[in-house]
Image (cartoon, rainbow, N blue to C red; front, side):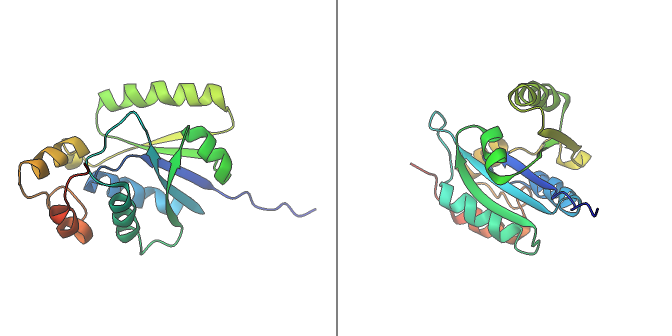
Length: 166
């Protein structure tokens, strides 16, 4: 009897407010390992975002337009439920620091309790990306500074021109 190969589907969740070169690096490293990766922007009504959701979706689609196994979507609710809806067996996360690890470890353990069939995978970013995070990029943007060193080149001009979400 011939076994059908199992699809390797993963979800990379985040707010991507905005996407940084660290996010891009991690996602590009993961891409060859999976049949499909959903880059998923979680909508959190308790959180105020800096950039509009529509822009963040557009930017992610532009950045990864050259990778056919990546899809970009927004979702409501728990990440684990989005994974089940998409048939994903993996949640992907990038780590910059030990603080990131501790935060992500707690969330991964809760997700494991919610569904032990979904694995969380961690990849380290490049050392030079360690200080780069979305909140720093937002602060530079808010102050009128140049964010092009910290965001994907393909969309730096779009982010620079974008106005803050009200």
